[in-house]
Length: 525
Image 1: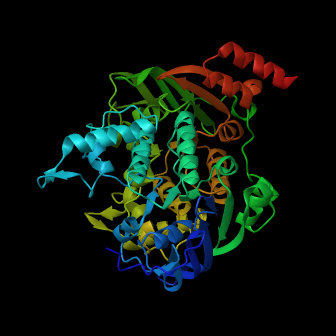
Image 2 (image 1 turned 135 degrees about the horizontal axis):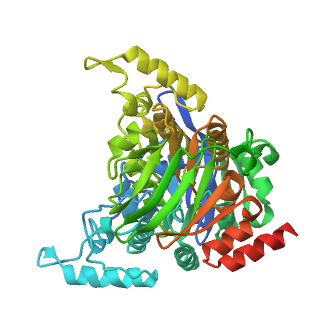
Image 3 (image 1 turned 30 degrees about the vertical axis):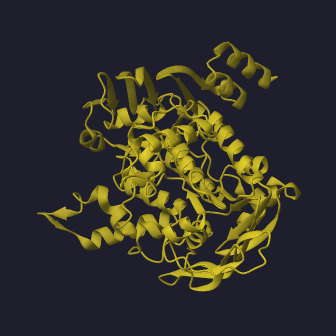
């Protein structure tokens, strides 16, 4: 039976999905302004732009989450008006989101076939479902038990399950929104192989990524959005990195240079006593005797591959990860182990990696999200001072240049970069002595990334002790005074001074310290 939201027009063309003059606004803020976009069968089409450029809104219009205010969407030759995402899925449009949108308490197999479970005699045919799910994940090179609850898996494995779900339906379009952000190099290679296979089968793929190198590895064409408009569409092989960034920003790429950078190196930190000292941290199956120090005004980088213990280290410092041994000292005073409340009172703040699950509260306003951590300070005899909160929020929205129609706008309506700034503002309100930043630029565009990096530099210049986790080597090398490299839950190496180079970091990540020393000496020459 034909889906009533689709009117098929013959003959079908090579274009499988397109928009014509699509507009969309939220509370007077124009998210899309007459966007024209087309995806061909058997094509991988990159969709790029700064956070807030309209990428997420366009994807939601294409998939039935939002209905456009103007213009039209065409699918397989006919105009469509998807009333809800299920209609788009039934039509053959699958979406893989950056932040996995599945059910953690259900098994891997149930998530893959959720809403489409095979049945026998009116009941779910579990053996068939699990067998088919096992075949799908094995095709992706993932070795997991499909009977296990999804929530027990890491983010990378969950992302591969989301891809398996998309492959389980006869999709003619697959939209991938930052699919590689949580994947290891091996998983990225597998994802690209599967994507090319789908392309060769005539499937059209829309690929969103802030890792620009990936675009040239995988994509055929690119469309650039800026301020809700499509400003460039063309082939990837005819575009340089500088040209792409310039289209995204609407200005010369050279303006991306970091302003207010710290005076990296040891000289400006000499004689300063550590504000944070960590020693002998042990956590079951994750950390083994981790120790580090951070001085006021210092940016300490935490390097390591996925699974090395970087996130676990900052969570242990913050008291959010149960530890069996070790001590954390801030300003000479011990912090109670396994106590987030005491860590906060001691001046420790943590910006977690997963802003959706552990950060923003989507149904609250920007104002309420910023003020959450300081509500006790803003109350007297149980009564909250609304005027003090308004003044505080206004101050930090201005300082961090948070783009919102007003402090009362729902935070879920903001771009990813602005949501990240809201979370940074929340913790800066607490006046921390130590700021733990876990992938603060993950999933945000180059413009917002430069702003966040400059903000980190400014915080360090003001005397804050910063611990920075990043999967991007250049970000660590350029942004840190020292780098502690973790491997298998233990400190593998420490790089500073002349050793603080990309080649030395790469060697240390691989666990070859001798190679790291040689690489550093070679780079000096």
